[in-house]
Image 1 (spheres, helix red, strand yellow):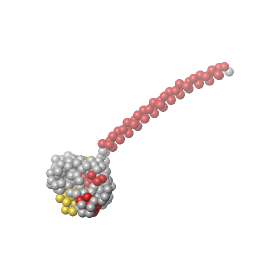
Image 2 (cartoon, one colour; image 1 turned 90 degrees about the horizontal axis):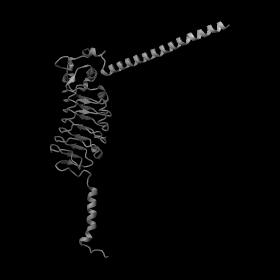
Image 3 (tube, one colour; image 1 turned 45 degrees about the vertical axis):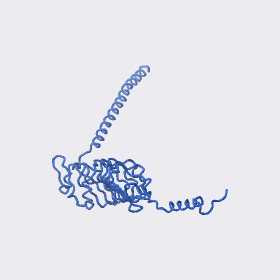
Length: 299
């Protein structure tokens, strides 16, 4: 078969293919932009206020700043950061998140800023943000958080700003905050804190770390257990919780009761065993004396 004459359409195909391949190879990884979104540059995707029901697909793989605030997104896909591990800034404000799937932040090793405020989150489990070790700011404000596991913020040794304000928190384990050695700013205002004995440890921690609260104790209120009123924490002191020093938690009471029952049962068993041994000894002793008398009579 002969070669096509120069200038014919067939002879131009290899050159066109090479040109197309060259363009694809030279195009930046971030050239694709999701439909309806705006990409100011190859590393920024802006999908704010688009009425989105879920996280858009087909992001540039090297996206670093993702803005999806003011939508109706209900979940962060469990494998999201596996594909977009270059993300350093994620704005997820004002969506419809009610929970965070286990492993949702796996692969988020480069994430520095995370805003999850104005969602419907109700609790944070242990190790929720374990993979985001470089996180500097985490906003969870204006959710419905009623429970935060003491290990929810483990591994966040670089975290400097934590916002937990305007939630439904009545108590918070101090261990959750003690796991944040770099913490500089903490927002806890706007929660229905209950100033009971369980709150005493948190109050003591807040007194020692008052510099981390933007307005000190003046911005945080709590409810008194025996009174139908709220007061600011600056009106309290360590003496306000003096009666808690000798109080026992429900767990402590169960331990004490169980220990008491166990000791009582052991004492009863020991007494029964000892009584049985004594009784056996008493039964055996007369027989021995009788044998001795019989031996004397025989003599």
